[in-house]
Length: 394
Ligand code: SF4
Image (cartoon, rainbow, N blue to C red; front, side, top):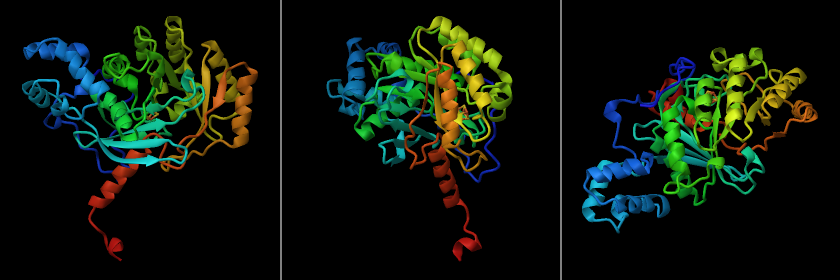
């Protein structure tokens, strides 16, 4: 099982919500290994143990990642006996689309059901100029790394029902394959900004990134893969020691400990001093700039003082800043910063020489904020299974 970073105690399913608890992850519910979670070496070892010749490994990977066969029996250049063995040994399509929402701006949000009935979200985002250092005309998929989240950020729908489990590498990779299959579009950027803290699912994250990046796998360039963290400092250092040139984004959302702590409990374990030491280490090992994500909440973190502090911090590690007007979530008291506050904040950063943008909003007409679609599905399921009351019948 993946190492789970105990930065914050996993929070039990919220008592504030009448959500149906996601079905607990148990050994009884574990299905076959997921094919998309196997590296080429894993598959080669499996084939050797099955007494199959080595060249078949590449053939199978080609059927999966290039020809996108949806059943082993469709891999017609393989012997029938091998196809049956593979079907017995692996799950090829582990995600099932529950619903998807298409925004007027082309943003498409997917809700997938996993083999144990848990739900995860992915969001396909149309081209954004210079998002995470990439050129325009990219198709970005925002993927989930966990079911729920233990980190309890006080603005995020994903944390509302607590943490359920880590995603398997195959469940991460399959989000890209399924999004491409459903949309008919090629994903060429991946950002780990969906549900969960990716650095709390570290080993599975690394394996998924290896498969996403591999030429025999999904084939997405490392510079087009961005891992976003709430600030798990030790794992930022570990990631810096990895050879892949992936990008790092930090969900900062507060420029002082006092403000950050109000909305991000992780800051108690890794305060800004510790976090910035880890970021300095990242910068010493990697060429790419770190991106700070900064949601703008009215009256909380959008003051000129916060902007000045943020500018200092960004300059200290040559970071870029993405300002994100807050998308309200019903359970939190926050409101989006006013347009004027957004502009004023941006100009403080610009005057300090910090590259910064206010992110163009995508998918504002759908449940685009991370975790909202899952929350809605589970709330509706719970309502559908609750006994009818007198008022329901009237
Ligand atoms: S913002 Fe990220 S780390 Fe924080 S609760 Fe949401 S998913 Fe978890």
